[in-house]
Image (cartoon, rainbow, N blue to C red):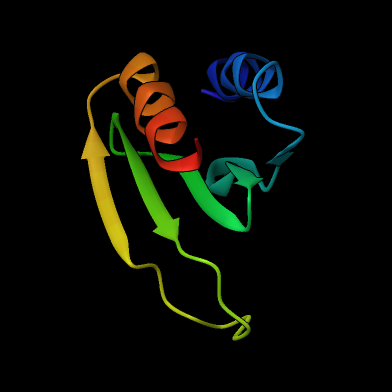
Length: 84
């Protein structure tokens, strides 16, 4: 799964300046930002869990939207849609 996350990070890094893979064993995830919007992508039980944030001065603000998709390709599409 980590290799898929690394590939996903590479794809998103081609489009957005702020894309980071945070490696924490089985809890690894990608965090991407653009124009103060942000999204976190993490594998979860064979699917891809996404959390989306709008700009906020509250660093502990909860995500404004969440989604689960079946493939990393679909996760990339969701990230692109949110951050553009």
